[in-house]
Length: 406
Image 1 (cartoon, rainbow, N blue to C red):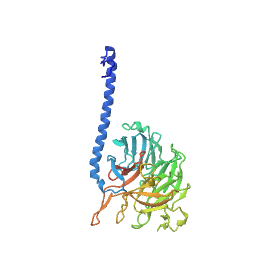
Image 2 (spheres, helix red, strand yellow):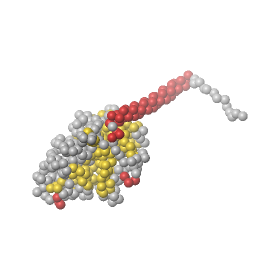
Image 3 (cartoon, rainbow, N blue to C red):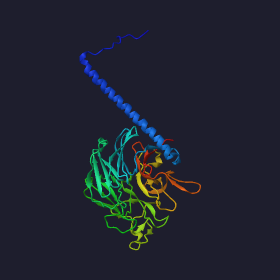
Image 4 (tube, one colour):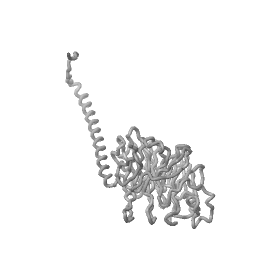
């Protein structure tokens, strides 16, 4: 017994409906083409990254059990600091600074896959720092802080950068500036010493902050040789930062530092005292180490600790929450290379640093004869909304993604 009902009838449109039908059909076809294009771009990106990953020897990278690493994009030469732009439901933009390349990149995401990379600024001087705030992208360029307005909607036709301020020192030695907006909505800017070791004026060797319009600049941390990474604790909103130790004191001194600012204006020792307990050979007689704030953790000499972030995601196991990840760029003049990895800093429930340990390593390889080979240099880390961790690599021109998938 079949179902009864009105017969199926195909109604052909009258002449008055032709225009509406044509418009509707065109709209459907355009949507269909856009969908195919998006799928095609995603598949192309996946295929490109698979091929690129093979060349990068990802099999040489070692992570804790249950973690996996992949290439998000290999189209960001000299990639340095990263910041997340507008993002919702797997769709959005990651902005990436560079150093010698002089460019700022925008990596478009669809379904959390990189589908396109745009150059949104070029010809800049050491634009390593990028910070995003309410649709505006801030970029550091040595003496200048620039701003690109309405950037998320103009990736293919980026706006001309506006100069927010040009008051920072013009020295290029340690002139690449890490920048980030703090919980107070002020922009924090690192200002390195213009030398390996010297006793510079108060304009240098500090971390400063300013309002988003460039006004009300003030120093928040002093005696900081060269910080290229900082973040705020999710527990109490205080500032933590890495600091690179001086060179030419041997292979094992002084250590790079992880520091914790608990009061504005604190002094962390440079150039008089290193790693909290080692007077400088040239300037140590002028002041005692006890006068300064010691590091909460010694990270090791010459590891070049750069970008760092607290892990605020929920994808990784619970014991990783509120821990720190630090990108170690690696030594340049040590007799035996160190660094070239990402480390995890374990904090207790009170937010105190307990220890640090390797999280991703393998960019530095040694064969049986001891010959060293470096194929990657981590520069920054970024926690994504889905809880995955991104790592920029300025040697390979890559952004990696680490997932937990036991």
